[in-house]
Amino acid sequence: MLSSAALGRADEVIPSAPADITLRLAEITADIGAGKTVKTTAYNGQIPGPLLRMAEGKKVTVDVVNETREPEMVHWHGLHIPPEVDGAMEEGTPMVQGRDTRRFEFTPQPTGTRWYHAHAMAGHNLNKGSYTGQFGMLIVEPRENPARYDLEVPIVLHEWDGFFDSDMRMDVDYRTFTINGKILGSGEPVHVKRAQRVLFRILNASATVNHRLALPGHKFEVVALDGNPVTTPVKVPVLEMAPGERIDAIVEMIAPGVWILGEEDDKQRKAGAGIVIEYAGAVGKPQWTKPAKFTWDYTSFGGNAVPASPVAIVPLVFEPAFDGNLWTINGKSYPKTDPFYVVENARNRLVFDNRTEMSHPVHLHRHTFEITKYAGKSTSGIFKDVVVVPAKSKVEVDLIANAPGPSLFHCHQQFHMDFGFMALMQYKS
Ligand SMILES: [Cu+2]
Image (cartoon, rainbow, N blue to C red; front, side, top):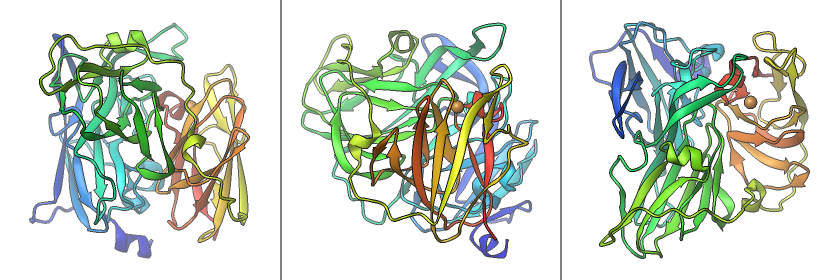
């Protein structure tokens, strides 16, 4: 506790000096365009929350002012920070009680596209946790920016008006989708110029929905996954992202016009999942054309280095339980799951063995892992904190365990996390 307390603090008593950042949690009625509003809890009265920029290795203080009646938690997704401030009750981060304020202090690392969001159980309440407006992008800036681009555009996906699509209440569906808090056609277009290199920083802040995005007439050069530069930047026509994932992609503006950057699925795009990209001087109705069939494959961005042998191999088996209402890790559902153990300062291999009929985007807090084998294919140099484990497949990831303390591991699909798909990773003593 002592060593990590030196790196991160969660204080109840607020010193008089103002914090670097203040996040005010309150219920708002947000105008999302097309005559629609949503009533939800959000940060600083806006959706998404403010785009935060922090400098690598420079300590920050954040005041979380909870103006709601309910205890809340802000999780710093993708940061390697101590459990006391990471933002997960299960790791020991203190909740911010209703009508209370707490100051968090930590040193952000590593650099890249990160994000912050609510971390609470929602169960069947579709107005809680990641179903709400409590999400925002966080960029941890490197001392020197390695990428060459002319314009940076954050793209944040979310959805609203959730409902259960049957009496069984096992699958959540949505009536409305937004990018950067607005229904397609309602927000300000992204203004670009011919020959510009535009860096899109894209975040799927959905509670439960996978997205596939395209921009007709253009390709995405994927330069980073979950904020971490890839070994082999490749141009692709479609980006695929599960809840929690981020993609940094550079688009060369080579096709003047007015376009829709949008979800491939017609139903979701027509329900709002898109944003207009407008070239200077171009006029007319935003154009959409369906992309050619494309299979997203993480390993296309990887290399072929052979990883060193791990000192420990940790199997994690995912199975449904009972009538499919619960998920299990190694035979048990959270909170009854057993912690799994890794060896400190060593290479540990986690083997995700998905024996279920659907894919799961699993997330490990406070660490970054490297994909070493994906559905039978060896790869290297792809560093992530969320990875989609396809149905009936195995994914192996290596992790250098250098952030002692409890770390939460869970499916980032909120409805799966809430129904058992969660366990704690601990360091062997
Ligand atoms: Cu899942």
